[in-house]
Image (cartoon, rainbow, N blue to C red; front, side, top):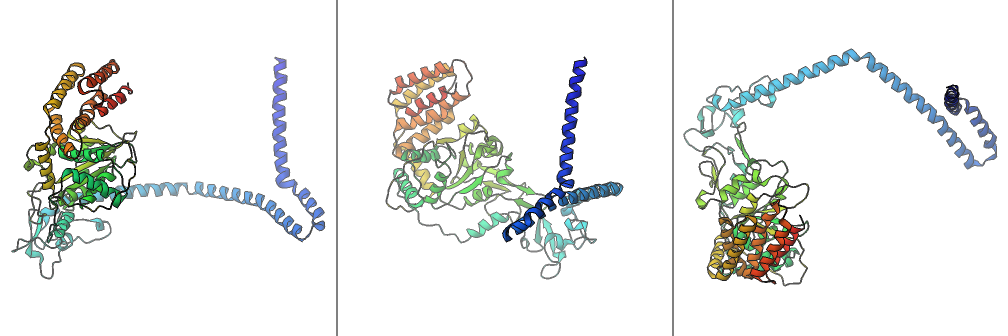
Length: 539
């Protein structure tokens, strides 16, 4: 035990000695050392040249400034701390007063909102309206009817000559909406834009194959964008099979520029909607009616939907990065509407009732989804996005872009004006001219039976319909029937295998690959076989 005490004493004494040495060195550095500093300075100062004297003085001034600055900061910090302690009671009272004022402001805002909700019921005649806007916090007067409606009570229209009709301010005796009173200002501007619209001359002779070739050369010569004929065939055939297309693939392959340039080719530029992670419901796309301002908060999506009703050309809305939010949430109503068999049922409710000043193409507060519009979504698969569910995939036509096309030279190509009706007519003609052959249908039935037996997967009615729409148009665009079948099977049927969680999936996929080669031939169905190999690597 005595040995330990000796050890502890020596260690502690050495620590104390070192600490004392540090303090002594600090004192010598900042206090007692100045005698040595100035001795050295006066020893060398007479012997150095003019430049040396100047630099010596600067060095000494810097050395003097360092401790002086340290002392000033310490004194200032001590004075500030003392002042804060001295004012402690006053600061507490100040904080309490700020909190009380904040509560009063919140109470005033709540009272304002309640009064705003009763504004319409209290409007009429020359009575003063118990309405409190933002100025209620500073003004002592209450706004009058003219202040609220924006209509002066003197002049051509007196306050007594104004009444409310279906929530709309109307001049008495005329039935016409009061000036600057429109709850759809953006759509009203669209009405003005097309008030004297004269449709251009359209090309009604172009074929689908010419459309594909002309667009490819247009994208190359006018926009320096390069796509393979195969991608364009799939895109046009996808438009024939669904109103919703999903462009998938790695970044930089032209997912967004494809529909953008295609709409430029048709001389009806697409509307770009950037999907945000906060999108939760239909109001993110269509907007909503503000009960306080009596205005509809319109979106670019709604404007594009409305304007498409005026246009004869195919119209496109691009939903950029559409899987940043859950598609089945914010796009659910549109998915349901587009499934309706009759286009007369493609209707969306905007407001409960119609007003006299509503835009021309709205009826009973509803908007019709035109047959001439397509919704093109782009999607990436990374950690920042949501998985696209089978519900969305079943209703959409996925187009995969995983490779950039090589640049090529071509002659200049101008745009093409076609009507949506002519495009639909070309789709129908393709279905008559290039129906799926009986031999291909027989092979498809064999594959369907195999998938039902081994994987419990089947070709649903929706997929069969899309196949009958896609493949004939794909052939009319210059493709081969079996290649079109291959693409639909890979993207619409075999994609469902990704969701299966079974232990024997690896062996079953290998057997399926062999069965496809047996039924369709070893050199056919390359997309399906490549897709199966990729799925197999996931397990």
